[in-house]
Structures are given as C-alpha cells and as structure tokens.
Image 1 (tube, rainbow, N blue to C red):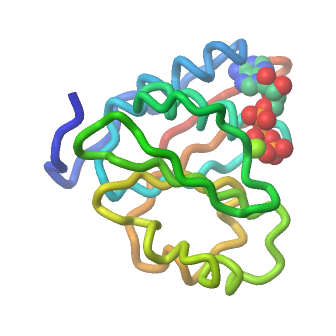
Image 2 (image 1 turned 90 degrees about the vertical axis):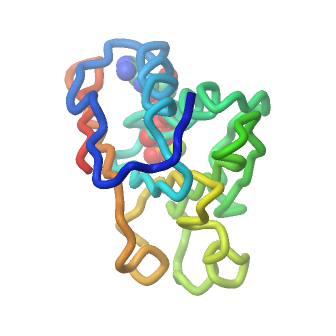
Amino acid sequence: MLRQPPSPRSLSVMEKILNSEQKTIEFGEELSQQLHGGDILFLSGDLGAGKTTLTKGIAKGLGIKDNITSPTFTLMNIYKTNNNIIKKMVHIDTYRLEDENKLYEIGAEDYVGAPDSVCLIEWPEKIEQLTKGKKIITIKIEHVNNARKITVEN
Ligand SMILES: Nc1ncnc2c1ncn2[C@@H]1O[C@H](COP(=O)(O)OP(=O)(O)OP(=O)(O)O)[C@@H](O)[C@H]1O
Ligand SMILES: [Mg+2]
C-alpha cells in the first residue's frame, strides 16, 4: 500500500543491473510502491537508455492500464491511476523542448509536485524553473553492454 510521506526518507533499492526490458519494467513496478504523492522523478540517461520503459513499469505498479507512449511532441501526458493517494501519473519528455515556457503554457506547473500526483521527467536537464527548489529523486540509467545500470539518488 502507498502511504502518506514520512519525510525525509530514502528509497530502498539504490543500484541495480537490469539485463532485460522486462527487468526494467519490474524495477519500475517495485519503485512505484515506494513513491509518495508529490514525488518528482528525474529520469536521466542517454537516448534509448530505458527511461520510457521504466515509466511503463511505474505506471503498471500504479495500476494504470493505458498504453504508455512518450510525450515527445505533446510534452506532457497525464494518466489516472487506480490508487487513492497517488491519483495521477504525470509524464513529461522534454527531448524536443526548445523553450521551458512551453511547459508553463500547457499548465505543467499545476501538475509538477502536486500532492496527488507523481511526476516523471525524461531529459530533466532542459528544465530549470519548473522544479526549482523542489525535492527531486534522480534515477540514472546507463548502458552497460546490452544491459542497464540503474541508480536511485534521493
Ligand atoms: N534493462 C534493459 N536491458 C536491455 N534493454 C532494455 C532494458 N530496458 C529497456 N531496454 C530497451 O531499450 C530500448 C529503449 O528504451 P526506452 O524507449 O525506454 O528508452 P528511453 O530512454 O526512453 O529513450 P529516449 O531517449 O529515446 O526517450 C527499448 O528497446 C527497450 O526495450
Ligand atoms: Mg523515452
């Protein structure tokens, strides 16, 4: 069960090698059980690292049935969960973002860090203002041969 935040806290799994797409999904499912409303996750990693795959796992763990596709052009997708505390999963992908103001124009400010949502951001390096001063959980995904190394920093 997902609970209200006793803060500060640390997430239990800190570093792991994942040797298949399925393992990344399972990692996301496990991670989802440790998330709290208001959490902002920076998904950091090269092209094809597995950021969207991890998002699919987190979505699965939150009971989202929709097909997760990266909001490369729409910038932000919002999904309803079947959880009473974390009601929404907000997925942002800034890969094609040229100006951070675009995110304000689509109302992202209302969702990022909202207490009833978790927010996942692919390519967070492009964001400065939107998450300024907010507590961030950084998930780093690196290619290691054909597998991935995932590190959680919070
Ligand atoms: N642990 C893993 N081991 C091997 N392949 C993986 C693993 N996790 C994900 N993949 C594969 O990596 C590929 C890219 O995944 P994904 O689209 O999630 O990456 P991404 O980081 O979101 O990419 P982009 O930068 O384009 O948004 C997919 O083909 C996926 O199946
Ligand atoms: Mg992606």
